[in-house]
Image (cartoon, rainbow, N blue to C red; front, side, top):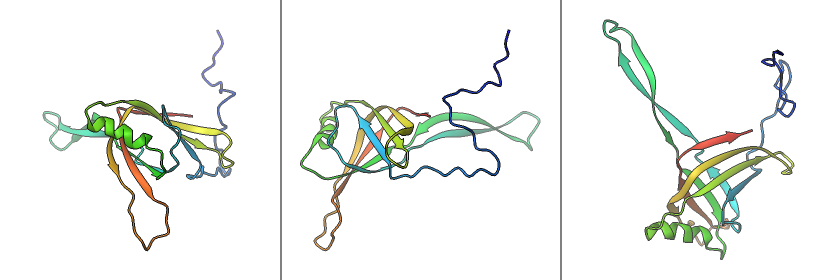
Length: 161
């Protein structure tokens, strides 16, 4: 029988070696993929994250030691910022939730390489649905783009290399 425990996957990215500089990816090259929504111009994604609660307890007879065990997992809401256009697909999605018809979608955030040519990693949000919408701030003294915010609740996040 052959021992493959030390074998490396040929498709995996090489690990950083001591003395080798590995530049981090840039945050401005990404794609946001939501089923049935193709016309939005996303400018920012905020809030990708999760939290595992800590439960503290003391063992009988060891009052000086507080043990920690993992508890409930929760997922941060994700904010999607996008430029206002005549397209109303995102606003209609939260409108469906407002009327009691929650449509859940699989949402993916794909980080791209610096040339925006290839996907280098992806975060998948399971069963996401809009839970908040904020309109664009409007001001006669501003020259900025009108940017709306849609906040998504979801049931889990996974990261693919």
